[in-house]
Length: 138
Image (cartoon, rainbow, N blue to C red):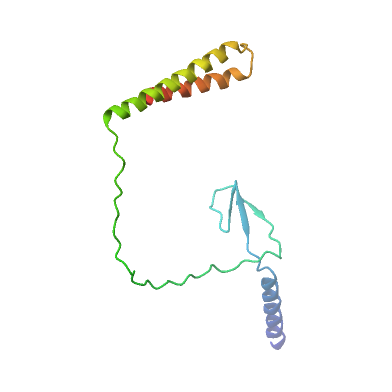
């Protein structure tokens, strides 16, 4: 009976030593996701973990005590410069004229390109962008 207990005790030590050697965490790759615990039913593969990988515990941040401000918080409203309706209409008209000139220049440049040119697609997208900008104007 003594031999049985001695064998059981040695077997327990050996199994504990084997468990202690296999303490590396398991990392699983499930598609493009890496996880410690794969979901059942997912096609996951176990990834080898190098022994020199060091994991640390997350940092604990301490709350900073709040001090009372020297001056009370006040909202400052800065008035925006007002322009009268006539000036704004002139600006809008000037912006429209600039965009129309750019559109005409672009269309003449696009006509000079051959139908097989690689710049035709770029030219068409630039023309569409200018037309969108013109449509946004009031």
